[in-house]
Length: 227
Image (cartoon, rainbow, N blue to C red; front, top):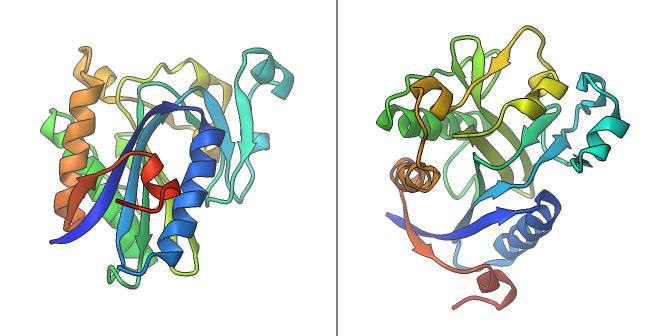
């Protein structure tokens, strides 16, 4: 099993996490030992736009969104508009696809499989939909995927709704799709969910499915040049 570094960022504003993620991307591109990084985080409320845009998928005025203290941030990932907020588990793998022997399609399927295995362990049955990537419970989306590849290294990643408040989803058509809803692990179970416990379950499935033995390091690991 190959080694990888795991950095738990806790709760962090999206733009701060994105800046750190791009630092990690540069670190991975220059890392001589071929070691991938996995960042895990949950964000304060934010809407992010993908390469396809997404402002047209807002169902309320941008001024209303900003008046509620919620940012709208353009990103370089694929996809349309999405929402991140507390209670949503986000993972940003920084992985060299060729070295990992993964195509883009097989990588996306692997992210979906991580989410499927994670929610199944806590009692939620979810499925993939090849027409709309991510994770679904019926017609309701429980997990999203958006990625970007730069010089063979993939970044951005997945977002799983664990115990998220649905209010902000009412302000958009999620991922630009009409006629679909959103759900969460807590909503499907009908009970409160221990976010930290689900996080540890996901970390274990990331390790198993990616074939990585994680070394947990702090945020300063990247800026400090390693251990």
